[in-house]
Length: 366
Image 1 (cartoon, rainbow, N blue to C red):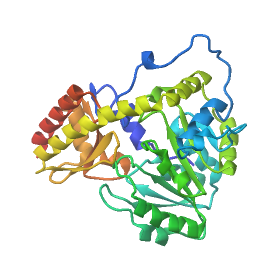
Image 2 (cartoon, rainbow, N blue to C red):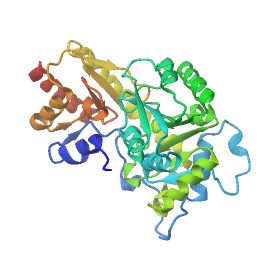
Image 3 (cartoon, one colour):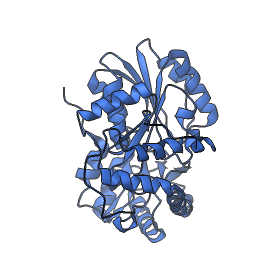
Image 4 (spheres, rainbow, N blue to C red):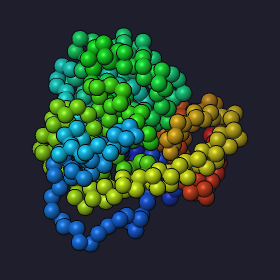
């Protein structure tokens, strides 16, 4: 059985290619450069371990520890962490190794198409809950969706594409349902800065997935990870042996050094997010007759809802490409309508020019 076309990747890597010179679509902070990386010319080019180097797994595990816990003696071999080719491979390995045909999965939309298409391709039944940008999570709808065959709940908080993060109250409602039905809770945490608030700190049967692509501006490294129960991680490692085997040991060593200097990268992230959001907020206020900004919760992008734009967001994005060579993400690629996702963690002049072009296209569309 063939799997559905991946609309997000099709838009970014195929349909839009060659049509833009200004990118407000890529969902991470402004990327860094090779010269910014701590490389060592004496590193060997051997294989890494299938689950990632011990040093990197220790660094990753330390992210999730409370203050003071990191002073404990390192474990001989972290079996609750696996390093992967980006967060997307971590999620794919998890779905392929933890789910079987006939299982039931619950996820949300608008969101990442992989969360419903891969489980469905395995033969799972999938319920997709509606979680629109700017609206609270409906724990009652979650409870009503649970079946005897429900095995997994897939979440994304802070959410791509809405920028919305679940509150503690919303988490409480979600986890009451998960605990009552023994669900494995998966949270894509690529945009989480404080891993003390991770799902693995909240729920014993949970998996956190993250990486260096979005906050650190290093998607080219393809370094991601999953942290969770050892039995779940071991199944993921075994499936990885059948696919990519291991990551690049060079990039894992770089990742270890990056996480050792994490605060500097987080500070860089915040230095782009804060002023960028000010620019985007001013833009939305100036065009409030046609668009509404859904305030993001620390993500480098935001959802701009169309309130009186008489064309589809897909058509708007196409016209923006053709007339202004500017790339944004239309709502349709996330399973939604009437909005665009704009990445605003960019240098001020780049963002200003992009917003100017979007304003021109708004004027032509209304």
